[in-house]
Image (cartoon, rainbow, N blue to C red):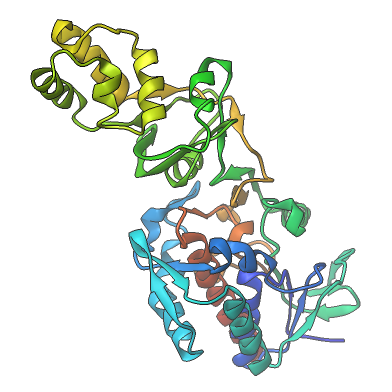
Length: 390
């Protein structure tokens, strides 16, 4: 059968691209090897889908070309997607740092997108292997269907238990598009034997400022039996490279606070003073790391400064990450150098598009990656319809 476009991947980006193009008059076929649409949407945000962020903008994304996302994000914003949510009467609420969630279930977002596809007359085929893609005479042939336009919306390999693969990269390479080496992002970090004192307090969470290079995030960190997790760690993990340190500020203004503790309780020991600033188990671990057990009144200013340096800049060297199995997204992917920032179309292959997580645009934790999916999908969907009308 002939269509105006075939979209591969019935996730967030694929569903909205299909709905956009279909409602603008294009004949669209949406294919996915999974048995259900929007599987990653359903597990996101603890099952409530953190579907966007009020602060979403180009500065919240990593890419080899940091300017690439500007056009799509400006033309379909978080407020545009929120308006769609509200048209479908989906109740929502805002959590910290501008994160927007469904009051009910993430399934409401999937249902909304499927309803939008139905309005556009989109044909959806699930449990359909993509198989071989044949391209010739300006047409793409996939799974028995033919169209002059093909959209890669299959995401990246993060969360493979949901059926995620790197097939988009294989297809892109075949058509001559470059690939920025993919890596797990928004992922827990692992620590080695030199940090057994910290992995020994697994389950403990506390607010920190985590830094990797010039990137820093002030949120909670979670100590695990294998290393570090929690929002602050997931954020900096996207910037982390093997061998690089991660620095945690556990106590702000530590020197000032320790001197105040020394004046107030000179007979107290460091662990007791730290327990006023940190959870008890972390206070004990840090007191042991810092390594002096004398009463605070007997500590020198140099010792106070040394303790403050450890509390204000605990430097750790992760041994790696928990990998794609625990990564919320994939960084890297199809290089933006071969794509139009306005339409997401491959500049060297007319009719071929790449959107969403498959592209080398990776957002922060907190709804930013969904917003990139919506914005890039809208750009491609409008371009598909415009080409069909021309």
